[in-house]
Image (cartoon, rainbow, N blue to C red; front, side, top):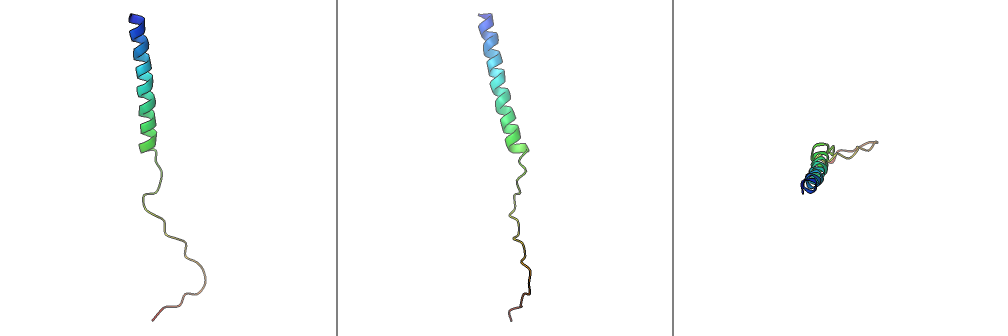
Length: 50
């Protein structure tokens, strides 16, 4: 009975550790830009509209 409880504890610890590392990497190491980048300005002459 004690062996079964120890085994169950180890399985539970492994699952919690795997889930916590997934969440940690998902939310804290997210290096995406939150604002959109401006499109590059094309070269050449630009006439002012007036």
